Length: 77
Image (cartoon, rainbow, N blue to C red; front, side, top):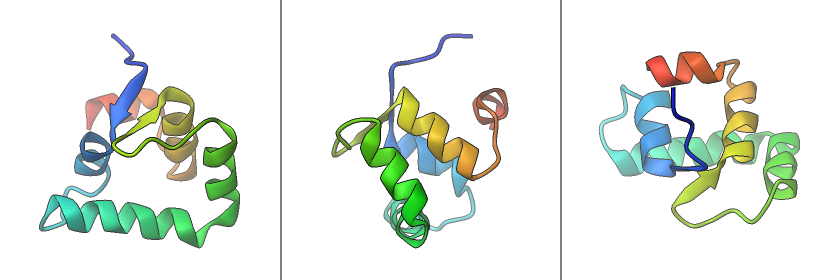
């Protein structure tokens, strides 16, 4: 299994929110979920600059941990 250094936010939300009508709605839902939890927002900010279109691997792992999803489960989604 190949692990990329970065993941596009669009690819992330497609897997986390498969029932959303549009990609922009899914991105907005992810932003809401991050804003609700200040600890999550702080952890993401501490791991590096939040790029406009993608998360780095550490940020991805933090988000998946918040949703109680392992990296292997995420790859299978």
